[in-house]
Length: 151
Image 1 (cartoon, rainbow, N blue to C red):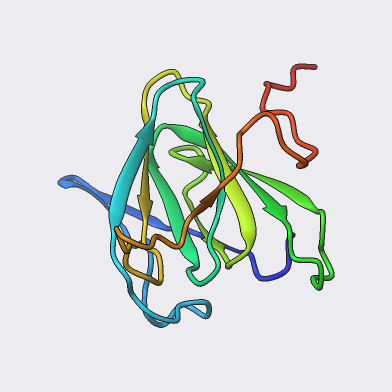
Image 2: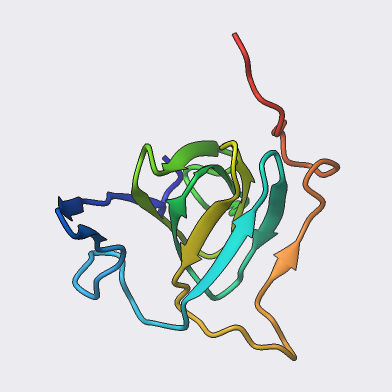
């Protein structure tokens, strides 16, 4: 696992009324502060990648469908520099993925319907000066192929 990345298995508590799932708590070991909460989606087969932040950490949970979340450690001083992680998250694997600054990340919807992600970053989005840096999902220096790996 890339240094600083944390995976928290989410517990679903069902009863006859429905279900409850806690995603992020301030007593989680990696929680530092609250910036905002937002939802983003992807349609089947769509890749939303690559981007990273210089200040903010992300805390992502897929609450509908399935996503392949991919991380790349671009930090030259990291013991996991150059490492790539794939995390399959969503209805069949309810997890929270904590992504530290300077770790490139993106996701691909691998379910047959739209997938929904809830992110709770540590910083607010600043419209005039966003802490968001992007790289093309397919043409870049990251050694990763977003295609499905059959076999």
